Amino acid sequence: MNVIRTRIAPAHWSRPWLGLWAVVVGVLGVSVFLLPWWAFLPLFVIAFGVPEGVGLRREGDPYPPLTHVIRHFVAGWLAFPLLYGVMGTFGGKALDFKRWWAIGALFAAVGWITHHFMFTYINPDQFPRDPGENPADLDPR
Image 1: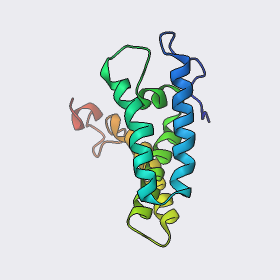
Image 2: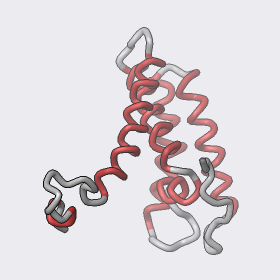
Image 3: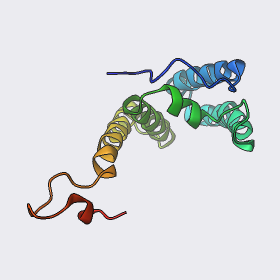
């Protein structure tokens, strides 16, 4: 089971930019657990929002948005639960749940299930109801 999809970045991507994203993800990933939600929110807006805005400005430049970096390097089965889990953790803290970490874990499970079932539904049903049915007929594109 692969966690890292590849260690090779596209040649035109800036290596310092990728390093910046690694630091941002590390800082935000730890801070969401340690800071109150009202302190985490401005940190998130600045640390994520500014580089993400730069990354979205021009397609194909050396500064990709975090979404593209995650898609390139991290396996989906891990990326979805982590992203959902961080959002659930933040939401649980912001809504003042006593067990905010449990909300984060629940959201992480939903992220994993979303990723898991997404691949089940991308292709036509492999087991049609009638043996004479063509799976492509059940899910026309």
